Length: 329
Ligand code: NDP
Image 1 (cartoon, rainbow, N blue to C red):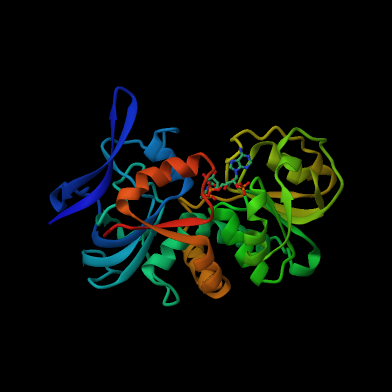
Image 2: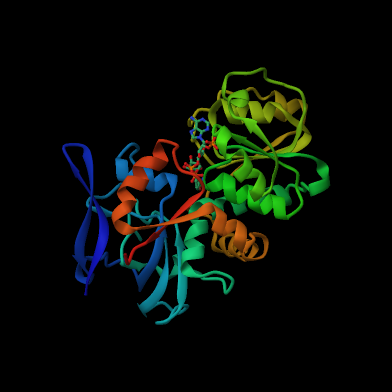
């Protein structure tokens, strides 16, 4: 059967992105579940792949799309049968294995999570890797023992995918959330999502002192670089910080002072190879702790033909919340 896909090719070191018509016969053979994709999404990493701005894609040509949700067409994997609704996040899909910005994908059954009853496939992609990573961050803070009455939680990169879902979840759980953003005009939107206060990200983005005034009980950081360093320097004694992103930069020009003098703990968050039990826990908790109206407020829907432009926009920092891609329009 033929289908549409966002195909990435490389010519003379340049990435080219185009909507192409492919056939089931061309799909990768190292997969045991054929999925009819309903929806995908544009994550920051998809933007990097589509624009070629970072070497995300490791095999050419590549179908883009690190996330997908849809219905199993056929399966030789014991956990899945035709008709099952499934979600795929990461595992190198869209990087080394053909991805889900396509109407069809052949995937490994070991990579798939059952779609929670609480979500449609489009809602699951409204969450996507960014939202599931936000929940992995919240779970890490909970395991660190952080509780709502411990004090304020800082969320950086607040208007982005990880940030908006983190704010919505933490707000619903009763935390007092402070949202750090570069978009002053999104303050009302971030408060409606669950932030108690909004601050200008410029206050965190320049080099600062190794130890600063203690403020945060915890931090969910999606930005890295000086922002993460300053956030760590402002965490209260015994607090916790999660690091998942590099929107400001991959560098971490820090001092050990917050860790050795204030007992601050820094948790690394990886969504790509996260173990299945943790993925399932994250999706279960998203079904409980992400209010549908908040998810709707952060989500915008586009068609497959608009995905290339959306990929360009997200790497320029111009996206608010999350974008669902209906691959069938
Ligand atoms: P988005 O682009 O949706 O959000 C990133 C946000 O960071 C922007 O909206 C902006 O928010 C802020 N930002 C952008 N540029 C800068 C800058 N120069 N300095 C400070 N802040 C900046 O991306 P996602 O939320 O989807 O992803 C966030 C990060 O997390 C990315 O780096 C992504 O690669 C990473 N990630 C990592 C995962 C993992 O497994 N570890 C999984 C998912 C994402 P505002 O305008 O509000 O300040």
